[in-house]
Length: 126
Image 1 (cartoon, rainbow, N blue to C red):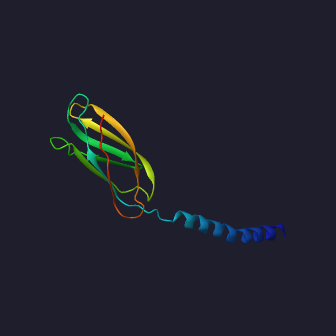
Image 2: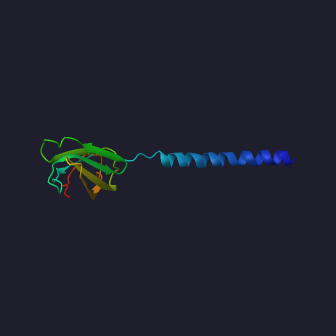
C-alpha cells in the first residue's frame, strides 16, 4: 500500500511540474526587440598632438572598432546590433593614437524605441 501511495503522489505532481516548466519556458521565449544603433562622430587628437588611429567602443555585450582614422579625417562610425529596444547601456570609448597613447570617454547609449535603426552623434575628446 505505501508503494501505491508513492506512485499516486508522483502521478499527481507530474502534471503540475509540467505546467510550471511550460510557463518558465514560455517566459524565456519572449523575444527582445533589437534595432541597429549607429554611432558617429569626430575624434580629437591626443594630448601629445598625435593623430588618432583607432576608436574602440564597448556598449553592452558588443565591442566595435573603427580602424579607418589613420591618415583619414578624424571621423568614425560603428554600428551596434545587440542593444535592446529602449535599453540604455553605458558605452566606453577608447581612442588609440599614433603615439600609442590612449584616452577614454564614457557615455550613455539608448536603443531604438522600436525596430527602426537609430543614428547618434558622439564626439570624443581627451
